[in-house]
Length: 482
Image (tube, rainbow, N blue to C red; front, top):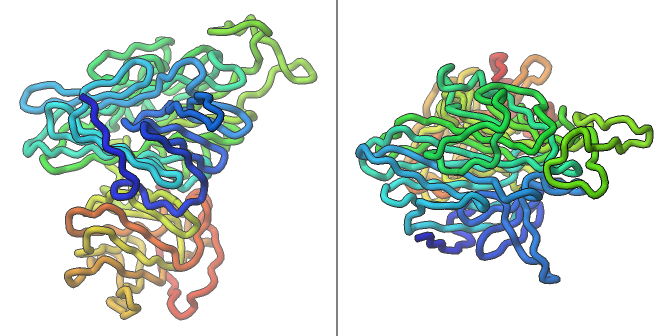
């Protein structure tokens, strides 16, 4: 039985609306810059809604002025989780085309602004899957923070998450190029989490169903512009065992870019370990054609009758972070990244205590926690002479150094940190101020508000080093590149 409760505040991201959203009882349409996605209540994409004129329209992943890149042929995007508990196998999966199943009775969905959160319980086993969608730190790219939590009271084994999708990139739907990167380096045999990957975007989202490739040369390997053909991507990630009460967190990225180089730059800035690119082919189908059109039946479209360069055309992206064998938040070099609902505001959905959190660079932050209180904060390696302040501005520690842990008095839900001055002439960073934070159970959200406006994307942390003259201290940081 698949039962959903509609909510609009408690479990959803507290976005301060940058961009508009449409929503309906079974999902939401979210827009961030040039990208629009449609999220169903069970967490998969390809959400169908009705316009004011009464027409049905399905949103998968679309780019303004280009069109949708995954919904034209079939609604084949989906996810699934499988595991072993007490020597029994369980699975829950959701896909608008190949089917869904394995849902428990406690499920909910909510959306506000350009964010949405799906919460799913598994049938027969006390495991939940939370998928929180929101604007990432890269323009036009949505982040889906996936949190799988074991509430069984005992360790679960063979935890696998599958995500599959069929690329149908306009204007050459059913005849596109697909690229996979990061697969080989992150196979389980190499210490990563990739159990299986190929170009079969039509596979069932149930991880207990074996996947097979469309092109045998795409299995568990990197490849560049395979095709053109009607294909997509499937990734199975193995997370091994999960102890009682523990959660596994990783990120999925869906978005678009003006061209291939920009798409790769966005994925790199977000720390994606594995990704798929979907690109149009050089030619359009012959008029009157359709379906899976072979390359020989395509025609050039430029005025010179020459083929179009797919790399110079809009490119769609599908990536994963936290799948390189190191869990997101487990170290300062692989921190939990926030959603970016408004300039200078960074939002962490349902944060888990004992993790490292990291927004883009600013010279200070006001950090607040909802429905929980802070117990301690740890400074990262490479930072010195930071200043910790209480919510009212009282100095708590004016010499907060690398590796030091500060323990809060009870009941603290807000504190401030200053003095995070960055010498951009000598330091290169893909993260800015990672902090390890510990807090009481039950946190629903955490917000970091920048004392000064940060740069818009983590790929370029050069910003004005002005203001807060009384509080900005030169901080010695070691050079490092994640």
